[in-house]
Structure formats: structure tokens, C-alpha cells
Length: 307
Ligand SMILES: C[S@@+](CC[C@H](N)C(=O)[O-])C[C@H]1O[C@@H](n2cnc3c(N)ncnc32)[C@H](O)[C@@H]1O
Ligand SMILES: [Zn+2]
Image 1 (spheres, rainbow, N blue to C red):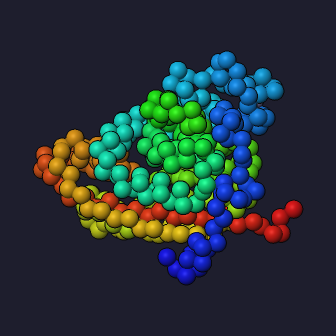
Image 2: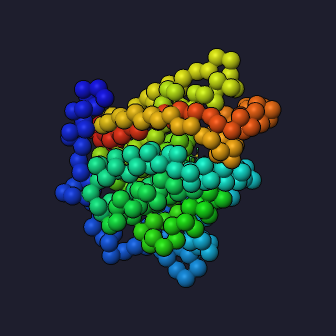
Image 3: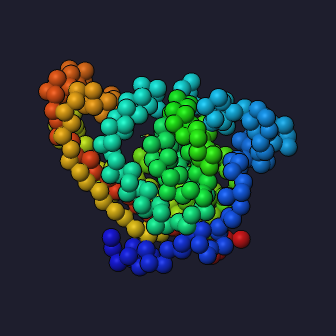
């Protein structure tokens, strides 16, 4: 962490304790507060799901999530990660190989916020981190958003009993929330639009990202590329300032063929791995893999010249 980040870290407001940003109603009202993706009016809860003043209706699925992705914004028939990728990631994460990251993300969140806060996990996948975040904030409201319906279905299913944890199918490019809604938005290996994050965050809100560190999955890359490259550090997004950056690295030996296969299937460069090489890796039965992550914390900087 550079000295600027160190300084910023010390001045980070603790949302939910004394900040004006806190919304105190959370512990009483556990209904999710979405915005209509069609007309931007607030959605209210009804028997089937949600509707707005203009009678746009969005039904709740039996798993508890709501689909707020207008058909015209889908982009493709199955947007986001394919069901195969989703299943591989869910099964791989279930081994707890990324447990150290899940824990670090939850601790970082706790350090940034008080109990009663509103947070969004943008591109939440199967909710592996979302669930852990919600457990850290028993009085908060936690939203998981993902464009892939299969992922959201799993996420909602695994967290059905937590009434303060809400999942929806929607795009990070058009988040179904009002302006100045969230105390913290996190994005864990997911694509977002920084302007949209800035719109939905409260003034001084926190943007937490998890990105691959330089050596992430380097052993796998060495199998695929002749000259594997290290990941570049993330650039501080426009309109934000860096509060803290935390590298996290572990090398683990994967010794089950199924875990190696799932890891190959869930990584973004999986499709570059020739079937023959994939089989070789799987049949070798043992593979050391470096898991290298960086957790960055940014604060939304108020534009003094705005308005
Ligand atoms: C690499 S996965 C990470 C999932 C989860 N955060 C995790 O780490 O387990 C990226 C996720 O972003 C989702 N995604 C891709 N484009 C998106 C978009 N425009 N809006 C919301 N989610 C999106 C994918 O469907 C996928 O679940
Ligand atoms: Zn509407």
C-alpha cells in the first residue's frame, strides 16, 4: 500500500455508525428496494413479485430471485457465464480452495462498514461471496446481481432462508437500483461500468474489487501459452480514490481430477486450453496452482464542480 492509500485508509468513513449515509430502516424493512428496469420508478412488493406505478410486473421465481433484465438488454440468448461454467465454478468453490479469499473479502467489508448498510455484489455468480458478505452484516441488506440466470438461481437457492439477502437477474450496465442507493458495491472478477457504479453508490460510497494478482493461475497459463504474461495491476477507476490494496497469494496442490477439470472449465481462458492438454492435466492427477488475488478498496470522490 502506498502512503496515499495508507492516509486514505485512516480517513475512511465508517458507514452505518455515524455517517449520514446510513439507512436505519433496514432492520425493520427487509423487502428489497429495486427500481423498475423499464421506467425507473420504484418497485413495490406484491403477491407475485414486484410492480411499479406504471404496472410493469416482475414475478418472483420459486427460488426467490427476480428477473429484472429486459429482453432487449439480454444481448444474447444466454447472457453472462454459460451454465457449464457456472456449474464448474460452483463445484470448484465448494472445495473451499478460495476460502481464504472469501474470508478476506468478508473482513474487508466489515472493516469498511457498520452493521446496517446496503451492499451490492455486482456480477455475483452463484453467490459464494455474497452469502459470506451477508453473514458479516446481519443488520444489513445485501443484493446479488448477475446477468446469468443459472448463476442467480443457484445463488438464491443456497440463501433462501436469509431474508436480508436478495438476488436478481440484471446487468451491471443498468443496475436496477435508484441513484445514491448503496454504501458499498463489490465486483469480484466481474465486468462493470464505473459510471454506473458511481450513480448507484451514495456519496463517499465504497467500491471494492477483487482482481487477479500477477501470478494468478500461472501454472495453468504455462501449459497454454508459450510466453505466459503476468496480470497487470488494476488502474484506479475515474471518480474514485484508492483507500486500500491487499494482495493475497496461496499455492495449493490440486489432487483430484474433478477439481482440476472444474478449474480449467471456469477460467476465462479455458477455451484456449486444447482438449488434449486438458486431459493431460486431469490425468496427471496432481497439480500445484498459484491463486493470486488483489482486493482493492476505492472511495467515490465527490466532484466539487458538479451541479
Ligand atoms: C468470473 S464470474 C465471477 C462470479 C462471482 N463474482 C465469483 O467470483 O464467484 C463473472 C460473472 O459476471 C457475470 N456477468 C458478466 N457480464 C455481466 C453483466 N453485464 N452484468 C452482470 N453480470 C455479468 C457472469 O455471468 C459471471 O457470473
Ligand atoms: Zn416501470
